[in-house]
Length: 247
Image (tube, rainbow, N blue to C red; front, side):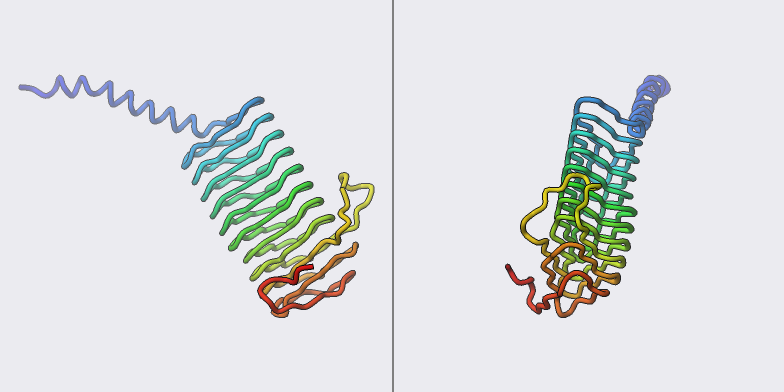
């Protein structure tokens, strides 16, 4: 019996499957844009821009995309993602381990960066804290207005700056620029000034290559194994324990 008819009948099925796969791959590389509702990028897929106005954005492990933007919603990304800029107005940003991104920006929300992340630009929040976990690298500035800044085993090639937040340059971290706490002025986004002085900690084996400049009163603790540039506007309190003294 000839097998030719069977091969002939299977050809349309194979073609349909190939077209389905090709269509899926093309769709995955398109923009996803909404006004109302969340956006989800599937793990391991490649996209162009992801945006929404009223909704959050989720990015699965290993996904790749360009700009990620929302107005009213947070952005949460998994491990091993690759993106360009991430930006939200009312919401936080969280990215997982081994993530790669250019800049992270939010107005009302915090930013949390997982281990071994590589960030090619600035990490900025107005009203919210910023934390970069162990093994991170930021090739830019880390800044807030109202919010704490913390890092562990992280390298920042730019400056670390805030107005009204605590700062912890944790164990094994290095800041190649300066560390500055500015005095609030009328030109700033509205700042609610805390009655408590900001608490600044330079942890064990941490290094700040540039100057430490404080334009408002702070409480400064510097571990005896840490190294810093010139200090102005504060007097360092040395400590040699694993944690800084509690006030």
